[in-house]
Image 1 (cartoon, rainbow, N blue to C red):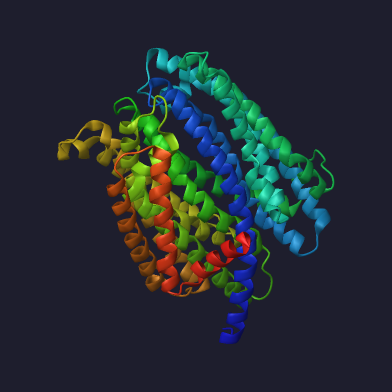
Image 2: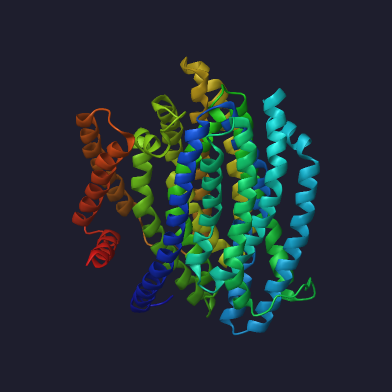
Length: 535
């Protein structure tokens, strides 16, 4: 085992490098998510919690299944570890050949699946949203057929992301989706006043396809310069290509299982009263913001770095433990206050983002209930991404798959009970059953995370204990929430944006103040960066 001095130097070096990369990822994700929140605000203004909103939310999920299966998560886990290691070993020509081959294979497979998806849409709808009938079902079919080609373009965009990330070009890869959001916003604002909700849903779907092409287009020039040449070749004789393919299928199945869980939630929600599917979608947009901004930013920055670690087995384990421990602290420091904010101040957040036009105060409270349920598993989901990235860096794609299957099985069983049966037991309105879906997913997420941690600890050894650190974070966030609640109570009802600024800004400030008093290094680093920016 390495001596303490060596471990300390490793920790300092890792902290510095990881922090810079994670900031670039977080900056790109932050800007794209801000654009996404603006898109959602505009969407809520024109659609509210209507039947058309239900249809649009359900329809966009189906082709997104293709994007999520073959897109960013799967390519990152299977392609980046192989490509980044080849570059770390100085084998740039072979790395370029692998990039060419994966692009060719991806384009072929995606084209076939898009065609099948367009032709088989009616059958897919019957399986995914059996609660939709009549005109609602017909509109869903029409939208899904429009969405599928755009999803295919986004899969190729994910190939660009894999190349850019491996070359540490994080900002462009994660900010590229601003182009997609901009196309959606322009479509909604340009046509929203002149068309019915059903017609607007169709027009917006076409806007999504245009946005997908733009998202690919902004990344392609830089990507092509990095791979130096792009040739159409299958490259199946190359050992690294075969390794990518071998890694691809376990991750593909794992992502498919997780996506299946999301579709099961959508199926269950389709049996609940009108607005449940839309409310679930609105809440998921907010829920995934900290997961992406804090969890994904650290995980994405660490994956190529972990994959390029060289040395003996002991040296690699030391590097991974240092990166993992540092990543856990970075993620938890910002995800814990996010979870408490969703639980205690979710109505303020939902109203600030969505309340406009057809989306009223009652809708904001409904989304809050769903959002509060999602807070249960927010930290587990965020940390789970980092632990899964560590497995992928070790070229182990099967262990995360096994635990993902357990998580989905638990989510399904608990989701059916919590959404359809539990409201009856409690004697509350059926439409609150959608909150049970997010609670059950959170419980299953914690079980998956604990399994990932247990297995990885046996493989590379334990990281530094974080229980005392986490306790300080939860206590700091709870105290900050009490201050925010007092301000909210004194204000009464006001404009959603004004209320959000008056409540959420003090909440964040008090959290940072208390964690600084605890002398938590992450708080001092964040405050130091802010002070340097304002000078």
